[in-house]
Length: 415
Image 1 (cartoon, rainbow, N blue to C red):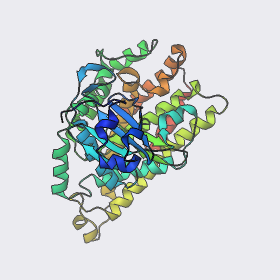
Image 2 (spheres, rainbow, N blue to C red; image 1 turned 90 degrees about the vertical axis):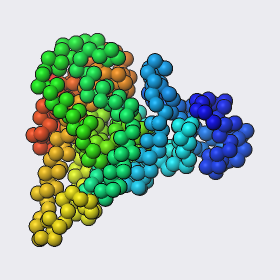
Image 3 (cartoon, helix red, strand yellow; image 1 turned 180 degrees about the vertical axis):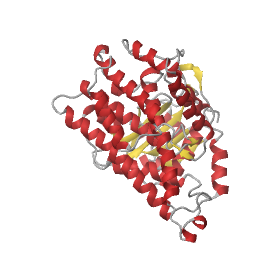
Image 4 (cartoon, helix red, strand yellow; image 1 turned 120 degrees about the vertical axis):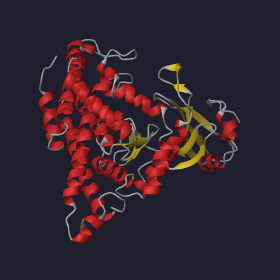
């Protein structure tokens, strides 16, 4: 059957013959209740409820939903999302929703309904805490980074994976433009809060900054170290008070090992800077909790990465034959890999902090602040800290230094 977008009304009839869906919600499609809940930029997302339970049906649209059919997108992104989910599930079991069914022609995935999980970004705006969040995210980022690389994978498997995901052309192109390029000139689809013009002019006049950003882009497009989620932010994580899962890896590609954790930290920093507009008397304590999540996530990442280095280093890179088998300590090699990883991470972190305020697709942490006169000064702190991260990415000591920098900018009037 040729591709056709689902609707609330047509889904039961069209999917009633899919055994994997019936196994989750019940055989009688006339008893299914369908709700469309997609609030992202690209896809249709339905919750299907039946006598047997619930499931998610996610279908790609042939255009960017945020913009409309004037910006077409290939449906094949669902194919890559499906393959990303299967690999993430293998590399960090339990970290992503279970996949029940994939239909390439209809560009749809049927997967586990997560409940009572909600989007993490909404919990951060509401001032809610998630127990074990740093442990989950640190391990997820370390395991997917390490196990998707030639530190762990065998050469034929890695090269086959790189070749497969190299076909995901149009979606990473969005990242290349919206994240790495558009914030630094007057791109057509850019938008920003009124009052930020002096800060924007300062960023765009900083030639050294733009050189560093383009060097980060060069690494992003040419470095196939590991399979990256590609869009790991607080809107791509669903949490309860004590459990979390990562969703929506359709921006998947092979890229730098520091990319995902850098983007993740940026979104926590933006949550941090936005808090004065969302919190009352508990502002200081909640901001401290957010910074604690950043510091602990990075610390746990480093610990897990080094554990995997010691126990799962079975690929062609830094083999034991050059180190342990000759009674040589391989920790200096791990130190060197880690240093490059964090350089990339902090550069990406600063760039993501810029694009979410200046490019297309802003984040709700700031956008939910209705008063532009309140929002602009908070975004200005975020933008200037982002620039400092980009400039100093190769010299920052660790995440604690980044958190100290955030506390410093949080106390400044920069607009």
